[in-house]
Length: 158
Image 1 (cartoon, rainbow, N blue to C red):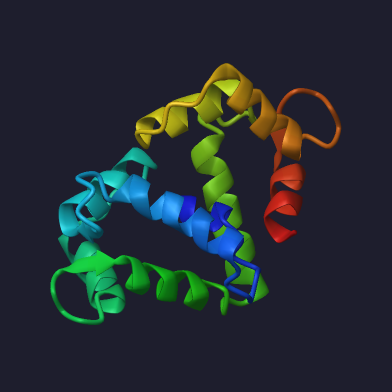
Image 2: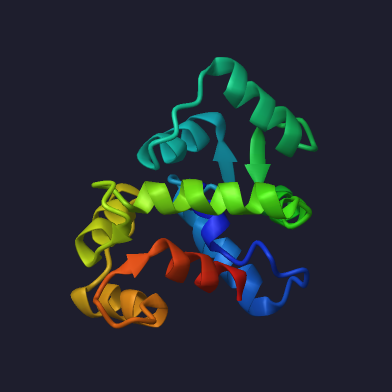
């Protein structure tokens, strides 16, 4: 779900997009091996509040692990990102809603700086207060200091 936050609607794989995907990939690749293992995938999903049982984990691995080595390398990860761009508008909207809900920890309809910090720390990424403020400000079009779903949706459709 976290992956949805990174330019799903962009058909081109420009350098900036690839760097965004690399950052997400590196968060999942906990040991820095250059590949995401089953355990790392399950841990990352768990940190995002998505529990994968054995069958679901197997299905994801079969879909993504094209070379059959039981890991997801960066090229396989990129192919997954491109294929996600082929989703129907309804599927994209649902994925974005699910992603928003991951960040809206308290379920109040807004993503606060504290919630963003909590989710990012759960993913192993510590951000400074300034970085957190900058991220919120970049999306917060109404200036209330938090991100609502409409703002989140707009930011992820640009």
